[in-house]
Image (cartoon, rainbow, N blue to C red):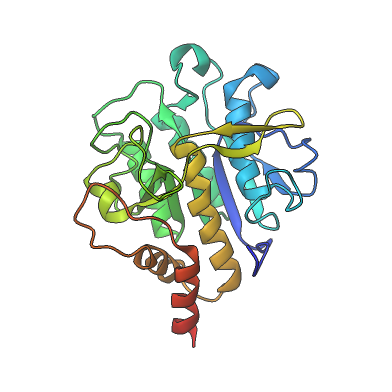
Length: 277
């Protein structure tokens, strides 16, 4: 954060809830709405709005905010994907369907996103394949887009259609000591290709003009996305796969566990600087 505020050329797709763009700490942010904005969300009481605003705030809030953003000068595509009725279907938080998520991924990629931040649960969880979603993830990967996704908060060992995709970086939530918290999902692909990031008592923006504090993988995921955005801003000529490799390598540790290592953006920066010469 000390080296850059991000660059407008770095476009981040936020597949989440709608964002309160009128929040005073977001008024300078480069937020671009895309997709259909549901007309029947419940305003400040709606979890989708609060969820989307929280995630956007971690990344895009003003640096002099009570909850400063990681990379406020990047550009953000706000692509709502949560179901408007999600509060009744999923009391644990906003959720979506594989089809809505797949449509959102393709839309953001087609609009120039280099990073995708996914913090979503499904309305009807299933172990069955989701071909349209898998195809959308394949499409993003072929276009050179880094996909960062929340591992989930069901305290389970296992994977989902998203976290087991080979191009996705799953994110677990960790406490201040760097330990993955018990509610965070873990698993083979999460341990091999994922990262842990700050996810306990994280403060970001609320729907109105205040702040809110959350715990979980949705709060942790934008820290990884933000690290990518800052590194891409500093090393804009490097292929995104090289940046991805540095971020995963910098976290260290042999990956033979269901628990992912902790994000180390500073170490990734030094790796990339050495490679660039």
